[in-house]
Length: 404
Image 1 (cartoon, rainbow, N blue to C red):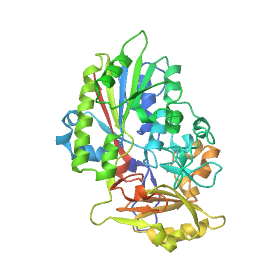
Image 2: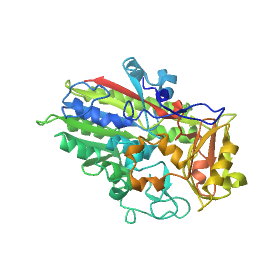
Image 3: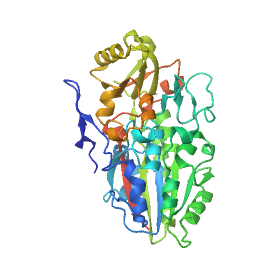
Image 4: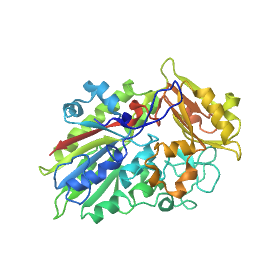
C-alpha cells in the first residue's frame, strides 16, 4: 500500500505532520506509464502491470480507498479483488480536474497546471472553474476561446502517449463531456466515445470493441462520475452513495467479463471524500469571518483545499491571520512553502506559468471543516461530501488489477 506519510512537509508546532502524495512512487501519475509498459511500451512500470495485449482502465470518480474498505457488502466484486490490490495517491489538491490531468499526462500538478476544482484564471485576475472551463461565480463566461485548453495544459495527453507507444486507444465517458474544455485539456488527440452510462449495453459493446486485437496492443479508458455526485449531494456512506457503489461494482464485474484472456481490467479513482454534514463538522463562511476576508482578493480551489489570492502587498498579513484562525484544523502555508515542500509535486518540475495559479496562501484542512463563499458558489456550500485536502480519506485511492 502506498504510504503518503513517507514524505512530510514540516507542520506548525502542535499540528499533525503534512502527508504528501506519493509522486513518482505510487500515485496517479504512475498509472498510464505502467499500463503502457505492460502493453509493451518502453518506460517505467512502477505499479508492476503484467505483460498483456489489452488493458481496460476504469476511473471511478470519488471511490476512495478507505470508503471502499468500509463498505464491502456493497462492492462484492471489488472486495473479492482487494487482497491483491493496493492504494495509491492522488496529487494535491485531491480533486477531479487535477487528478484526471495527472492520470493523462503522467505528471504532477506542478507540471500539468490544473490546480484544483477552481484556480486563478491565467491573466484574468479571478478564478476559473476547471470542470466547466468558465469563470467561477455569478454569470460564468466560457473561457475556451480566451484560454485554449491546450495552452493551459500543454503537456502530451494519454492519447499522445499511447500513439507513440503503438497502442490503439479509445476513451468512453459521459455524453455531456464531449467538447468540454477539460476533456480537450486531458483527452485531446484521440477518440472519445460518449455514452449515457457505463452500465448500458452500448457501453459494454464499445469496451469489447475497443479491446479487440487488430494487430497491435489496445487500451480503453473509461470514466464514471455517478458515485462522486451521490457523495457530494447525500454524503459518502449514505443510502444513495451505497446504491451508486453497488452500480459501480456491477459495472466492474461486467467489464471484467469482456476483457480478453490476454488482457486486464485496472480500477482506480481520482480522490476519496469526507462528509461535512456529520455532527461536529464546521462550515466556515468567509463573509462572516473578517479576519479571513481582510486582504483577500479572491478564493480558488475548493472548501477543503483553498488557494487564497491576496491583494497586492497583503499576502503576509493574510497568511498570518489564516494561520492563527485555522491552526487547530488546517495546514496553512505560503505559496513558496507549498511549492518547496512538494505539495504539488517535485519543485524542479514547476512550469513558470503554473506558479501564479497557486494561491499566495495555501490552506489544506486536516480537521472536519471547509471554507466556503456562499455568495460566489452557493452550490458548493450546500453539498454534504467534500474533498481536496491531504488526509488519507481524500488522498488514497484504489489500484485494483483483474486479469482477463
